[in-house]
Image (cartoon, rainbow, N blue to C red; front, side):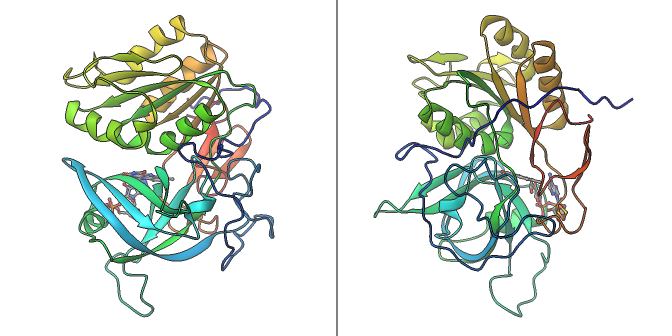
Length: 340
Ligand SMILES: Cc1cc2nc3c(=O)[nH]c(=O)nc-3n(C[C@H](O)[C@H](O)[C@H](O)COP(=O)(O)OP(=O)(O)OC[C@H]3O[C@@H](n4cnc5c(N)ncnc54)[C@H](O)[C@@H]3O)c2cc1C
Ligand code: FES
């Protein structure tokens, strides 16, 4: 029987309000562009305005032809794609995503991939002038679309729709946060880690991966914002931040699924916020543990997404407040609201 975990949403804050210079910092006053209102969303308000909740009630999305800056293989089947996207990158908030279209950049061009593919914004980077122009996606090859993306070369054009969705909204009073990510599921948590650290929150990352190679791929990118001197230890610490590792094959850190470390961590540390993304059974386990410890928890849910802007209802999520759309009402949800 599905179980709606009841709970309340505390006062929340935009994780995206990162301080200048912090990883994931977002430049204010980005140039506006062609703006289309999502059906059902309040018009006029530009997503990502400084201080606005992390992408809540997106009122505007931009369609931009982005240019591939780099497309790098990190581990078997795992890549990072960095795009020059000067209109979308400055607006992206932690937990938001972009909808990437292949072959859509040229008008009238036929594409074997007429549907866009959704990807979380993993990193936002500045160019040499210091403008936030670039965004990076961390992706895994699954089928024909991601395979085609893995073949993109620097200079190639793709169509981006974004930034989309409601991002992370940790309570303003968060002091110690646990971010739980499985595999490329860690992608939307990397910007959040940077934004929380910029707010002087003690950040613990619990990262699970198939093996050491995948773990290194994940940790070399967006998690580089966390101190990580030795990639073979299972828990690393500087003054304020920790990484806890788990691998399926035991090649680094805890031998087993990352949720196997969860109860120990919850017993050891007094967390007041948990964010999770990865396989849904993992997220459900995290949500249940958070409820047992009365900790506010958010999850980022994946659904098949056709339109990405709330129009097609292909991305339905059942919640305690009724049926919601992952692309517009999520992908980040209060874990206690989700009917698992
Ligand atoms: C909000 C959101 C953020 C995401 N962020 C990331 C990320 O950061 N990194 C990453 O590797 N993957 C991410 N995904 C999953 C990614 O979108 C799919 O792996 C990708 O669309 C698969 O496309 P494909 O053509 O290779 O696979 P195919 O299986 O050939 O795809 C066929 C169709 O199913 C859809 N589809 C298949 N799997 C998924 C899925 N898991 N979620 C949504 N649609 C799917 C595709 O978009 C396509 O329309 C995210 C999904 C969502 C909803
Ligand atoms: S993808 Fe169309 S409504 Fe969500």
